Image (cartoon, rainbow, N blue to C red; front, side, top):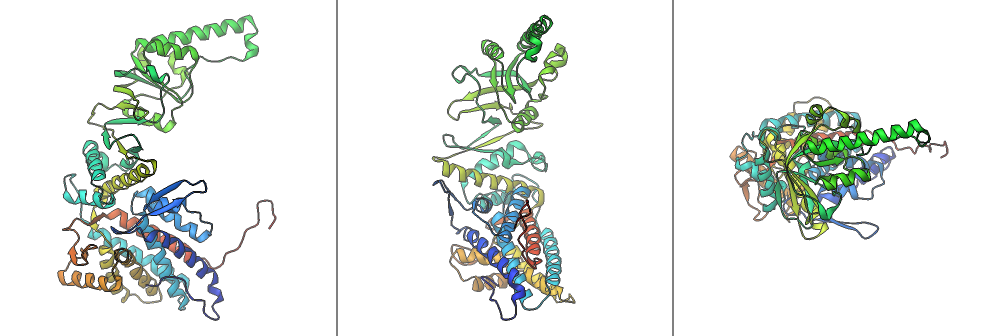
Length: 515
């Protein structure tokens, strides 16, 4: 495989922009490739104020790196797209993108037109993605042992994380996990003072008013306001008139009636997007209501979905009793957790649309942050495996597909075949890097793995990173979700094609027209 900087040959100045971009991509790839595989190491990111992040999560590394080169910044989009779409495999996708660029450049500097290389690469990526889909094994049951193994691999062999994610999945159920609009990774939260826990309900970061006198609520009604809990206001000029003052008093009296009706309806939990009037605050305190102001709209939506509350404006409080009652939600339990400094709202174990929060705990902020990222990756891997099946991990499936592409390349007429060859070579990069990180000679061990695949007639033969022996990856539980591999390859191909098509880099004028 072609790695490192491409030499500038005499008379090839026309490749200057391409080689410059390629070298920038290679530099970024080298920052994350050392984290790949079970023997990969971590990266320490240090901020200008001394803040530290220790991680081997590709998207975190790339997001936090100080990158100015425009082509290198394109590579960040690979990790971000992978994170947004499937939530795992960001490092592999980044390494694949870098390998595709390097292999494409190698073909172009040999004289193959860039357009032909890119067209061939796109064709090769489509063939490879189809091949991976056909090889995927379906997961139809949460009790499938290979599902837990896929979570184990994505969770970086953290048994506590695997147990947490599998427990949460059992609560949520396979039907909701297959819903593309639901993301289990969004349910992960971290706290230094907490312990690993699956909580059936929601945990709110916002704290309630009067912390030291917060009631513990049971079987309570829930009011959600996209507004402040206060009476309607009037302009100061209006208040100077007798009629205006009378109107002001009327609004205050109506607001008092609204508050009393909320108490009569059994409202115990009030969530506000904005603030609260002092009179309303005192009323709620006197009537044992928990008030949480300044709640984000996203959290309000989550609470509404779980409790069945309809988000309202304050004018809706003037509705008739029965009409307002239908707009309130219900929570079996809600209380302020002093240890976590969070409000817990229980879902009561509802079966039709369950809610969970995965609480990840650790001793320090740095450790707990990384644990939460690992848990989110594991949760995303679980959902991806359920939706699209699993494949042998460690680059074994890609190795088998790479040789399949080489056979297909022989039937392709035209220079696009060189682009297909570039894809075939790039597909071997993940396994090569994993073996390199484990301390082995990649070329030697990949030949052993490929020979075993041909002898056994299966594509899950790979190298044990501990012993260096050839083993059945699937039998040993070394598997990855198929969507992680497929989407990573497709996204990497899109970015690689964009980089290879760049003929020149020209600085734009500033917005004011100056150079």
